[in-house]
Length: 443
Image (cartoon, rainbow, N blue to C red; front, side, top):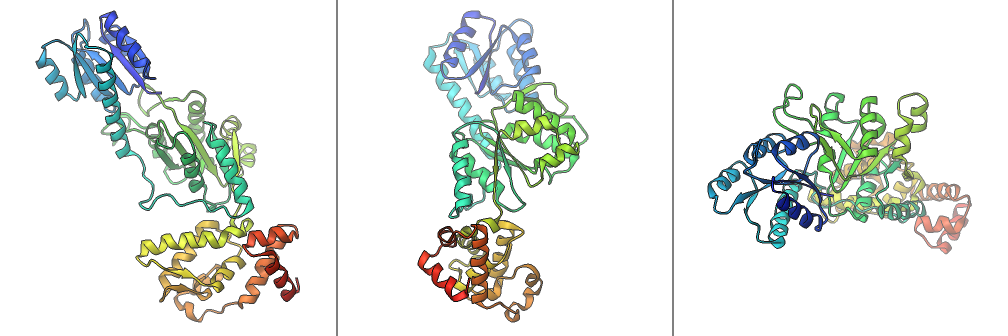
């Protein structure tokens, strides 16, 4: 909920403004003068502030300068006595969004100017948020029953604000799934912000996540908004959350409990409305036993855990996923129309993919670069030890198509416990076709 501070020494005016804005679904705090407002601003952040210019003690202009220096993202609307144009002009030069003459004309004027101020704030935030790739978020491929189960869980939890913990091997697509969860949620129009807890140095991670105040440390030449603030009203994705150091684990626990924090070097409490999706490829149970991860934080994160199966457990997804990835790679390379032949499909199905979707993408990108024509054959699907030989890919020794197909069927039968109907469905072939191949391959 967006927070508004109303500052005016006339009780009737501040009460009137507060009632109108609360009717618009905003959370309003009232202050009787500039000094009271300054104390509130030292403890809490606000999205929007209405302030009278003429007040005893700290006047509105001094309050405006304080907010501009300490919380430049806050929009400000000043209230002036009718006809006092000079004060309003000075306030606008200092960064006020707009001004209203007193006496106020009525609630419609208040609603209009508040709405415009919040709209500008949202537009400014949009420019700072992390954006998805230019050609959109990758789709989640879920032909396989294992992934269909996962997507069913995503759809159910997306309708709530519950914290989600994604568990899975490296490269299984945890961020892609978190983006899908965000799109399915009521927060879909809000920001999606991602932070890789393992990719940022310990010295910078706290500032990156929670922001910092000017002068908090050497090099902090201005106020900086962290990922939690940028994600306000949306979803924050914390990848590799197991890599957080104990101090940050404690701070994250507090945010999950209270939805509030302070920037590094700051004293103001900042409240955020953020949905947390965390992810890890580590066994957090072992990390807790070893004392590397807080048990109370684990229980806060694992409100709704979702296990993402590795690619070797979702064979029916491999070919359609490869085709989707190849189409994206082809567009990036300026070679639309690249396609995989049947032998390439069979080779993809015969490999265990220890690096999961990430490895699949790398293999396909290499194949697309090496391909001389529009069709990619099995000789360009270089996996495992074969990948080191890619400069001479054309002469690489390739298994027979029949051997690769036989191996794929054998692996899927093992995965489904010998269920032939499931095996056919997950391989994307008809049951009659499967029976024919079982007979040919003597399986």
